[in-house]
Image 1 (cartoon, rainbow, N blue to C red):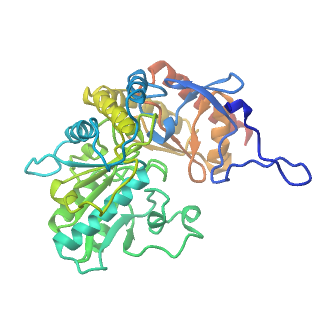
Image 2 (image 1 turned 90 degrees about the vertical axis):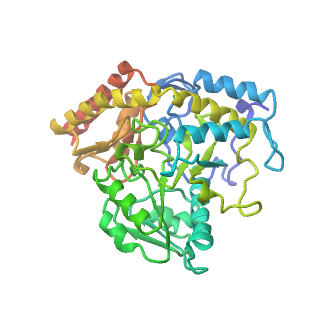
Image 3 (image 1 turned 90 degrees about the horizontal axis):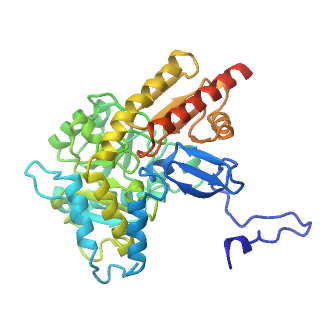
Length: 419
């Protein structure tokens, strides 16, 4: 059976068609058939410039030749053993990733890596690790461990994670919630300090909040949070699943502020848009609290994932993607600030090749703007209200980026005229 042979599931007795897909997404009206680099083509042959890049999963564009080659080569060898057995790429992958991230201790000890699959799994792994470290090493009384998180956070949609979300769509209807989390205003280091007590095992934060609209904290925020967590013997956990691996112009976004966390969660771009790959990278003395049987994953660290992950690390090891994000980011944000100056946007935030754009609600919603961009051959995605996110592939050409920004300006101009 081919994809063309698949037909919708039969509908009700009145003959109304009924799709078999659960309705947990509200996608834009485009159906992608093929993709290459920064461009996708729909089933009717129309081409679109992808300025979303899979929420950073496609940092290297669609079907990057080095990543496709690595996956294709591995498909002819072995794709899965489970962690019941070792395979020849597992240790090369974790060594390469640990070297890319670098030591997370002042003494310079090499980091440990725990490979998983999805970003949410990596965050769950970090939470479990922090709690066990708190009980086994810090001496927190059993059942009392707490984790401080930021308001407006997005770390995934598992039951535990939505327990400390303040997004009603992600949270409502999924109680009872997992206890042990304290939510404080994001960007307020004093609030983090005030929330820490003897039960606190970790502070879990995004360097830049992507889902909230690419919210960049004050320049002193991360250094101050690092200072207070170190002083109080609390783990600092950076969720770099969207912000990491080049998106912000550095390998880790926390490097922007000269901060080294204790644990880092990585995902999305780590799989290169080929397969789901995630990992927790962290201090050796912290990740060593996990022992056989305490945590695991059937597909975590599988040979196919490791083959792609090694190829991703090789791309980043050159520094080229990070450099492009910095250099093209100057063009990107200069043009976007010009749209604010022209009164076409209310505000722009961002870092590297990543931006959150606020449209005047009188002129439309974020969805309205994304649909206007779609009509002009550009893919983007709204987040909350009248905010959209742009995250071009780090491989995008300057010419294609200019094309997308010109389409954005035209879409905004038309929305302003129509309202």
